[in-house]
Length: 204
View 1 (cartoon, rainbow, N blue to C red):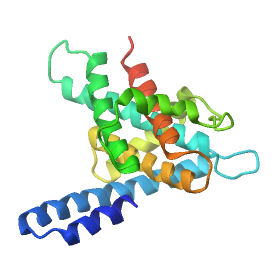
View 2: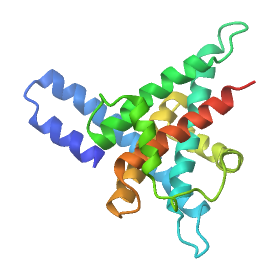
View 3: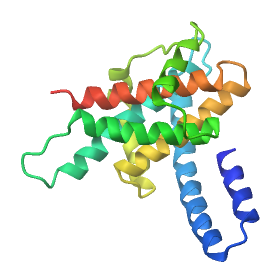
């Protein structure tokens, strides 16, 4: 849905310069989509329910946690050239805020919803929509594999956060269409989980 909507926008654009810019964005999004699909296959295999089927709530949370860890690593890479620099919580918050607005754009077709309202929407998630594993398990078992996929596609940690947002958006749209969870609630869950992971990494 994300890719098709953007391509339709490109076809309707009259300006050659704007069209070229949009085509570049579309190509970047296509590459991110390839990486996201590869990670999705990994999650569907690793995080299964008792009956052997992919466990939706666990997969969505895992995707968000992996994205959140990449947020911290991206900021760490940026700061590493400064002697004595440490990743501050406000840096984490700023990057997280940018990603939440991207989530809004992909899933709610808006970028003006106050972040507090996005996070509060998670309260509407069904009680049954809970992950079966915790964040440390996901980070220890899957983060290295996630990073390997990003490296394979030529993405650094910052691009890895964008791939993560696209991955989460694919899952949000899939699960909302299946009636498992409302789109706004799922978006709120993802926003929460991303911040949980990024903040946890930044703690001393």
